[in-house]
Length: 380
Image 1: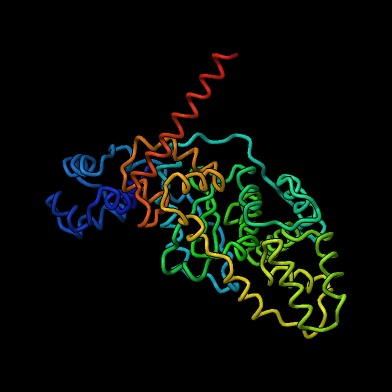
Image 2: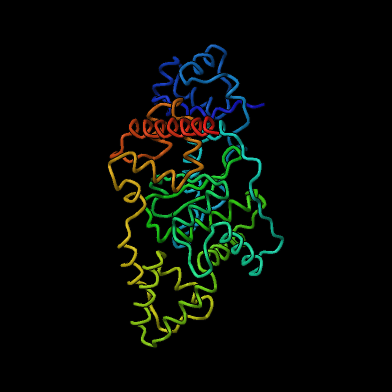
């Protein structure tokens, strides 16, 4: 089994060191440390000291390689921009920050996996109907962002809210990753929830298809996932009702205002319903929603402002349990075993929110729930 030195970079950062300082502590050159990172095996004494500094065991370096434990198969970018090598690298690095956390998590045995031989419109509709059924949402309603997060939780997917690195921040809404056998969707907290719904559904389809990256036809898969996401967010019954309402007038300005009204009342993107109507051939000619869609989006705060709308950590924690229950249950198991700094990194905490206060609140909830469980057992 080969020496997996790539984890030195991550563990050095977790320990609060730079690679230069690590080399100085070990009494070796920076180039020597670089050699270990790329696969050279340290001498016995160096390996022992390295493990002591990084709080690791020698066997940790000879465990299964990160590449087989973690993958970031695809990206659905903003405006379908091309995915660059840099984007893939930084998303991989972001996902790697959670590798040790998910390694310790119990693997859920019964998770839905969906395979289709033909990526047809009929199969897309079947999947979309099933996803809406799981979400407990009626046919006359579109998906809002809370329903989309609820769907993720029902499917056993972990949702992680993070400020994306600069290379991803303006290019990606969300991305799916598989970490140590767990399905994870990373969400950009600097995105409007109106824009996010379709992207979340798109990543959800990737998650339940759970394809190996090498087995995917990227263009065909992305198109199929888009189709399923579109049908899941906007069912035919809802789209037909919207079409009837907006075409009561043939004035383009009135049509746009009515679409804006529908979008605002049902908490979804104006662009989303516009393209759904267009794809069904129900959008009148000469209607331009660009300016109205942008204005509507500015009336809803981005996720960062929603999550950190109160300084009280109790409100923040309640929101996380509501939107991302699977990930929060996992975080609970580690709240007494990790550093405040690492905990803050896992949650991507805003500087305005004190990580220790959030840890204390999660611990309080955990104790309270355990006490309630014990009380119920005594009553029984």
